Length: 563
Image 1 (cartoon, helix red, strand yellow):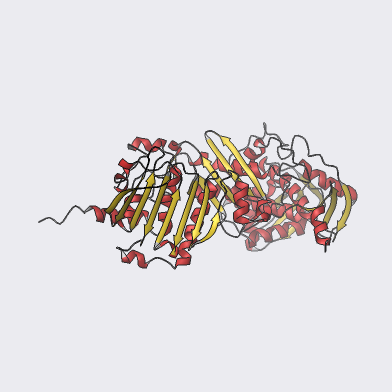
Image 2 (cartoon, rainbow, N blue to C red):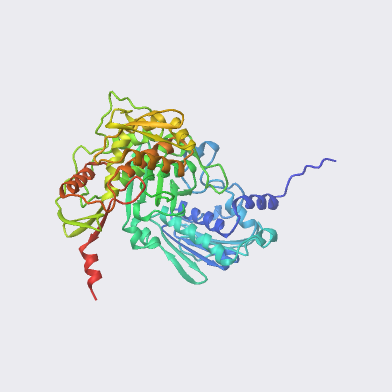
């Protein structure tokens, strides 16, 4: 006798539930997504005991027709697709038709729903997949789903649930992300009879950022609005002041669906590089809108994973979207927006190791076509480090080292891209420097990199180098000291990829050559530094992520002085 048998419907549904429903938060996700698909503008989620014993979701969507009530709990019953071809044009949150059947098989599920064309609503009660009651009932237009005693008939799965507080945290995080993705929908979350979260549904992302993160974050975000080749990217990114130690505040949506994708996070990391500090992660909330045939969401039942058909295109679009936003910020009171696509493209090409045609290259690509114009009153320098200027009742502190470092970094990086090896200050007497085994090995492996950043250098014996010239920079530096300092920094902070070595070396040269804190600057040198920053496409931070300027408003000063 054969051993293969057909499983009964309840077992099939419970197996499916194991894929779709791992914890109460999955129930909230599936049912709330159904509410969104139904066009709801007001959704209330009520939770008790972390969702283990009670979940209630009420919406004002279009409702379920009476004839569809029973079939809605059947596996693979859906109103959203009719065939596999429909997946290429599917924009709804759900489409598999597994969620309700899975939930009904492992709980007591009550559905109350009414469409606008019906006089009465309908109520359906299902337990462990079986309909136990059905009746007409008075109800407003929309749908209410009540899930009780989750996993009552699968005790092994129930045993693996966390404490009530932990399970509710999963739910709260989920609902908040749904509110961010659906700005025109008002959400209310109630836990054990207490309202813990509401969103206005105003359509403004700034409102919900303020609601979730507070005033400081709201005041330090920049809007993202990018559209190219069928891909629209909207949302916000944080400026340099709100970089994080982890990725918790990096939130990605695809056509309003929360996803995780390494292509997008890697692209964001590169776009934020040099703006957030070493070891820090940029703050962003991004929603990517694109045709459904650009991606495959049907990878995993949770729909958190996604595959893109053209990963390079997505990578470049995200990079451009973030860079555009970050380079559109106000600088020293000037918020004039200029075209910067060429600069961003140039940076992206360098990032992706694309070659540059030196003959056709614009050598002023790092600068704006016209420098920012500001009128400022020079106050002075405090602590021999911070330049203080006044612009329109606001004080600005300019970090002389960070500002000069950014100017030099852009200049040295441009020289490197164009292989400008003759951009050196030639020395009257060359320096011969003895190196350790590790240092000479680094020089040998990166000789072209070192020369392209402005060092006229040659190997001199087995453990020495001869320096004939150093980068032609504004300030005179000791050739031996700067070279040894750079080697020490590079060897101490080794990087794995060639691109990381290049970026780090260029940044280190700029850092070591820039004016330092406690170095006296003349008024002329101060003006030159400010004008140099005003000419740059990206003057906001040093290449290590430290802000070049900090603004202090008159109101902030008066607040400190008010008793």
